[in-house]
Length: 530
Ligand code: MSP
Image 1: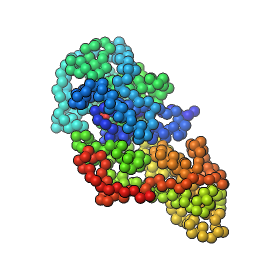
Image 2: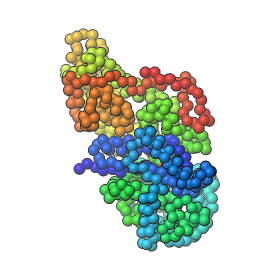
Image 3: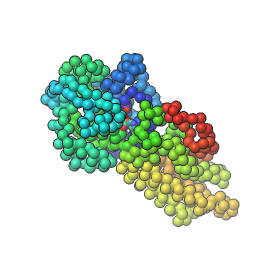
Image 4: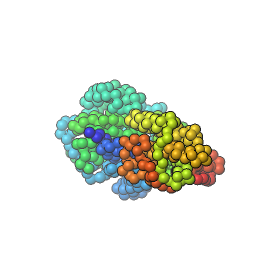
């Protein structure tokens, strides 16, 4: 029976536009979704925007427009950026969608009726940037560890959710299911949080202080706390599309490490209280930094996805993001490292194999595929290198080690480039008697390109599509991952024209500068050479 998977990105706050951090999560989720879809699984990807709360109300105020107008503008920017960089989501949810608002109010009504919501006194240290309370112990020198700002002292009557009642159940679930939260370091972090008293969760804000939110269904003097509202999107987004029953149990969330507590502690307790099953996986990644610091608007070191795409092409950006960051750890973004990856791996490794193979096919055989025999052990080794790449890719991607998965494909590509050097078809071709062997060698190279394109399709979709066209394969045959080596190209099959997949990037003086908030941007010349 084909499997099913429901993949979610966090809902992005609309107080800033998409940047490298959100682009990374969406590239990972899009690749993971394409990977599962390619293997025949029923796959659904949800993304969207988080639009309520104090932080957004403040951003709208400083933009001098109403919150409604403000969130509509930024949300549509998010949507159009994801569309133009090729993120293939199945549903885009906004927490201001009427369906979501009704859903949140229904859940609140149910939990209230079951006795898990009560009215009480609220006080503590609140970080508006994180939209949550901090305990003294979580602060660093009295400051929020994420925003390095002093939290505000809040004290007011509010509604509370009996979160602590579910604490033991959540901890037991995490202990019994080692892959519930991954990588492992974040599971340990979540368990450590759940070994301390977690308290109950304040889930309302008085309208006298904040009007921008979902009204509490049982008290029109209050709106819902933004996290209680936002987390429910993961279920309401499915329900909006009639897919809750079949897809919720196979939910796989992707988040950055700063929102671990809300997803590993708040969210499972909310699900238990609302009577829904727990999600299947919480996948946690690290931060992209720039010069060792987290990227942020105020530091002026934000990298914008559209600028990167325009300069380097989206597949190059996708490759860099997936190859450079070990999922779970932090990674530092430098444009020089991106250029090095483009030149070494994409232009030399993959691009070179494609252009050499296709050019020789046209030069010696007018683009017509020759039989795969006569073969030697070199050919068997080549086929085995790609079979191994396929196995390793699957293992690594299923373990979220995207960088290792790509590395495995590049090991096979290196083997293919070495195969050309060892077998030397350009030398053999000087002797007409050797042409059948030259044809067999090039057939092996075409198979290497075909398998690479299939394996890379989830990660580098545009490149895979260009290779498919250059190899002259129709979509149905290209989609078949079960094709055996030698089965893709019948003798006489005509390939397409040579392609230049990744021109080398030359820079006049080190890295070209992209989107550094204008602060470090220079007019470094970037030149592309085909
Ligand atoms: N709105 C909440 C999430 C609600 S989910 C129900 C939120 N939004 S956010 O816009 O502030 O952050 C969204 C995601 O971007 C988080 O997963 C966060 O970790 C991620 N990133 C923000 N900056 C980042 C980097 N510099 N690097 C990698 N990811 C980072 O939190």
